[in-house]
Length: 194
Image (tube, rainbow, N blue to C red):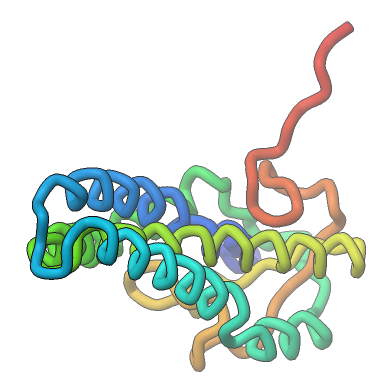
């Protein structure tokens, strides 16, 4: 960073960074969790897991939306000397910072399979699906405002998370074409060469 510029990470990318690991760890845990009969039996475990999946996806997707909307409304334009962090760097930082939490969540989901088969894994997968839905909602906010939302890297937690946490005092914006991630935090698709 030069001349007073700040390192900025995309809000949607930070939110979306945990979606894939939670989803895949949840799917693996649910698949392995179907093997033991458990205390409740497989049928009840899978039905309970399906309910937990839906509830978790809804709660994660809709929770704290006001904490994202408020700084988005009053976001300031990013300065010329601000450094935009690549999508891959943001995702890598989040995943490195949360690797032990992901491992513990996976082990807990596997452990619950001996009581309620597949339920813990489906709960974990539901959290991942909820993060994808939330990132998609942020993408729609960005498209409606025709501006991408960025957060200062030093305002994120030490584990590179919480883009709407208490330490975040506001967002910055850039044009919709800035950075290497599309609205919503997905990889930007480059047009095919003809």
